[in-house]
Amino acid sequence: MRRHLSWAREEPNEPHVATSAVPGPASKAALQRLSKLQDTRAATFVGDYGKSTGNYITDADGNTFLDMYCQIASIPVGYNNKAILEAAKSDQMATTLANRPALGVFPSTDWAQLLEESFMRVSPAGMDMVFTTAHGSDANELAYKAAFLHYARKRRGAQAASQEDLETTMDNMPPGSPDVAILSFSSGFHGRTFGALSTTRSKAIHKLDMPAFRWPRSSFPQLQYPLEKNQEENAAEENRCLWELERTIRTNEVPVAAVIVEPIQSEGGDRHASAEFFRGVRRITTENDVLLIVDEVQTGCGATGSFWAHEHWGLETPPDMVTFSKKMQAAGFYHTRELMADQPFRNFNTWLGDPARAIVARAIIGEVLDNGLVEQVKKTGDYLTSHLKPLAIRYHRLVANIRGQGTFVAFDCPSPELRAELLDLMRLEGVNMGGSGEVAVRFRPMLTLTNRHVNLFLTRFESVLNKMYKKHWPQ
Image 1 (spheres, helix red, strand yellow):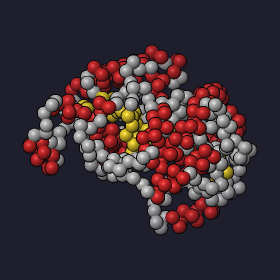
Image 2 (cartoon, one colour; image 1 turned 90 degrees about the vertical axis):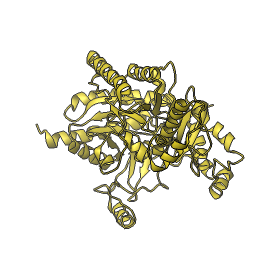
Image 3 (cartoon, one colour; image 1 turned 180 degrees about the horizontal axis):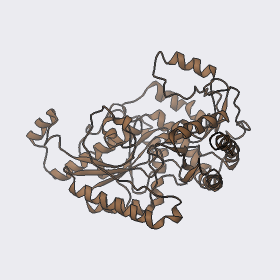
Image 4 (cartoon, helix red, strand yellow; image 1 turned 90 degrees about the horizontal axis):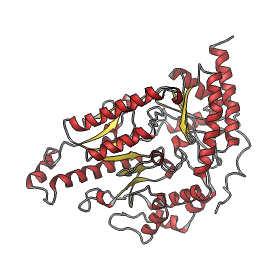
């Protein structure tokens, strides 16, 4: 049954920016105070979340922006969504906040039902269990541990760990601490904790000066656009990458326990590959007895026009694990019972997730499914890209390589400097956006974005493109 989304009536009619610069004076003052306590150098402005509504974020100066970035792709159904606020104010939420359980040893009486009504309501095909965690990096890190435990169990068979295994692992040495790897792809991003960081390949600054596992990487396809005019070249590029993947798995100096891949390389510049490529990845991992982990931290929860982006691939056999976070407002990974650790406490921590986040996730999933938001994302995404493509022709010096699925859309600017200028001007026009990779501008709106919001964006976007053309390419 479809319900009327509560944010629609409360939203502003359009963005409004009163300050001559963003951040404005109130945001700057707040950031100056905060800078005495935390590093604020990455901050864009200070949000006033009590006044933010639906698809609009309000800052400390009272500026109201159409939010096309949404806390780095993490707000699913609008600021101050009524269903989420009701969940936050519920007796169940109050109880879990006052009495946070160590879920692995003292789960609450309602935990199983809460899992069934939240995460398992949207479990990917083939997945009958969920491991709840704290955040996206954590989800990937613990999925890696599950892969390594599975690999060790296959290697040992029915035998128990030897005394040598038990002794050498305490010195971080094999055979107790074996040389085994997770393979990731060039330009991929999987988090900033130590294991996850060893598979992150997007920007050197994320990894610089940090010790890392010497795990292998394989090339991710560099597609040429427009896709319809470069089919032969792109097919050859994907075949080259698949050949390299299989060769790396078979010849790497240490065994590969799992391959991790994003459906769209989000932080790496919104890089895409075809469904055929991902089917090839699955075939290669299956034939070589290597697990496949799909990192849906940024693509999951409907943004690509399917609840899980890997559903677009049409796989004959599902992935072995699917990690999630961001728009779910909770984190973890789905898996089969086969990948459960052979003993308790081996893949473990104190909290093992948070019932409070599961309560919020239940409300989010209800809003998404009950209001047909995945289907809305498809339609709105088609509308957005159909209007971006003519602008890419008219303003080809600034906008290139339109690409995306659903509203998970991006384009490229010619340089990092011009991208930064464009994003600054868009904020002055009342639209909050972000970048990815070296030169990409990414759209990460909420699932509640409509054609009306797109029209508001397009008017302001073309205004900015005109200003930039007059400045950089005067007639």
